[in-house]
Amino acid sequence: MKALKIDHLGIAVPSLADAVAAYETLGFAVETREEVPSEKVRVAFLPVGDSRLELLEPTEPGSPIGRFLQKRSGLHHVCVLVEDIDAALAELRARGVPLIDEVPRPGAGGSRVAFLHPRAAGGVLLELKQKGSAG
Ligand code: ZN
Image (tube, rainbow, N blue to C red; front, top):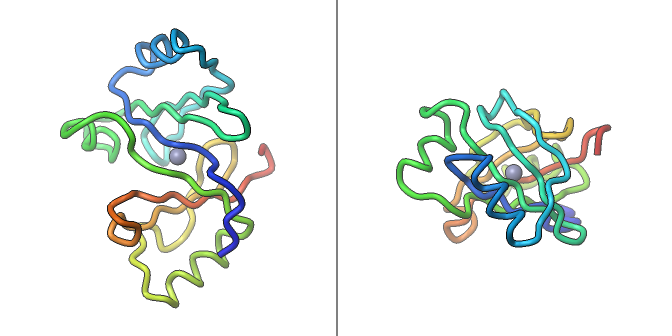
């Protein structure tokens, strides 16, 4: 698997408006906002150098982010940019790595993403991402 960089850190928040205001107070600025129906979230991306923070607000309480927020808020996942997500998943599957997504699904910005099971990575939820045409 060719990992290119940390693409973003995903932070689950109950209110995107409140979280954006808090991060703006810290000196960060929103670059893009988007609703991702496949993940049932509204997201805002805030650049940090060449990487970003992704603030995620659930659009439904029963969604993965909604269920996460019932237990805690804060850091939800780490996203690693890969060159070829299909090749990466095939390689990890062949090694017996536990996957949440057997096939990539649509992510923000036209990207394709897949999550690995946290037990594959020391309790951290890892997201793999391959850039889409929209970057
Ligand atoms: Zn993410």
